[in-house]
Length: 341
Length: 248
Image 1 (cartoon, each protein chain N blue to C red):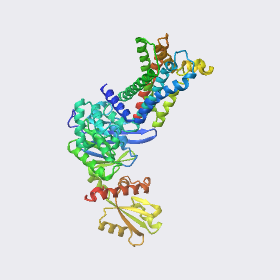
Image 2: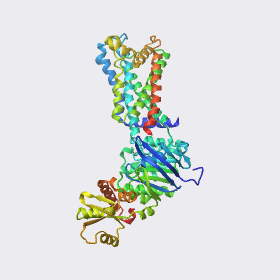
Image 3: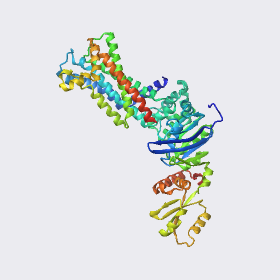
Image 4: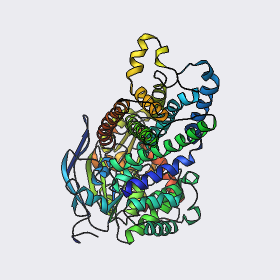
């Protein structure tokens, strides 16, 4: 394990990165204590993958420094690499090797002896419920099995810090649940997990702390509860009777859709608050035609925290809604509020 | 070094399972040998006793050309997936990753070469080489295969798609035609003779043929080796630069 047991697992200061003229990361500061699960939450293109690649020493930052597992990512690259592992968005396994062959190869590359690699592969296959499929080629695996094999492969060297870049993107809800329990189990064993996700619920379920990234900038950081206190849990969408009413209520909105004369207003979702809001916004009971109540989406959180509604499209918003709805169907036994910031 | 062997083993395991690529790299050279000997050979006048003896070095180089596409495509596919990032995060650098591909490529070529030699002997290939001649011929062929394999790995780093990487084969497997591989250069039009006489494939073929037939070869093997060394150095340097660029 590490030389200095009391150092944070990840400590980043002022990380900045541009590709050609596009700034993908700007002045990112992060501290992740050892043994924590930290989520970097943000939409596509927010800079999440770049942040992970820099911390995992695969990409050099233009400016800024970081220490991972106590080692500097530029000066002590080899030491960092020996202490971490990375599971990227695309499964890093060979389709034409069996599960066991993939793991043995990775274990050998992690400098395990041949017998040790064999033992480690068998142990991981059993732990990830892949023992029965050990001698089948990976191209016969289902998406969930492939992801588990990928994650098992990243654990051959018993890393101190585990980077997971969008680990559940493209997985069906059941495989996602399985992966979540694997991450919880790893965290329980003391591994530091740094994961990126587009799903609010995922960050909420897994992470001790959540960092919100948008346009390469850190928008907010805190525990799930801290963030929840900063944004409303629900959004009341009002369809307005005329454009005068639309214009009058515009300043209250975190979401707007002029084509349908709809404005979204943050609320905690309680009947009392919704009733009070309707009375306050429309005392004459003429301006609001109809309303719907949504649970807040990732977009809403960003809008609430950035106060910049113009850059987010309605389409994105609807997609997010669908994702959230699916998650809810699968997690009926879970507290609904729990699933959303 | 142990990383290189692990990765070579990986490449060979994977190529054994790519049945179509395996058939192309093994069956095609044999098929071409038979076509040249039995379809065209009768019509071609060479100064060797039999055409099969004349043509074997050319077919060996064709083999290497076909093998090069497998290598280029394997490198391109690695870059497209996440596996290179995984290797790098295990602190395995670009050099062992590419060396693994090159060694596997050389091993595949060796298998194809052995097969072609076997068939050639069966249909009348009768070299007259001394033991030293055999060794020298093997060294020239190995140098050519290594140089071409590194070049293929470099092309694999350059190509954005497997199709583009595979297109490289067309170029490389075309090079033996305007050389002394299949017909004597004297029979070609004048404007082509200059290119045919001086391109690297001709020097390699002339060395192999001379050494295998026990004829005096002069400086030709050294020129061939110099070409191979040049291609190798340029490829290794270019591969190093490209690997950093493609994986940053």
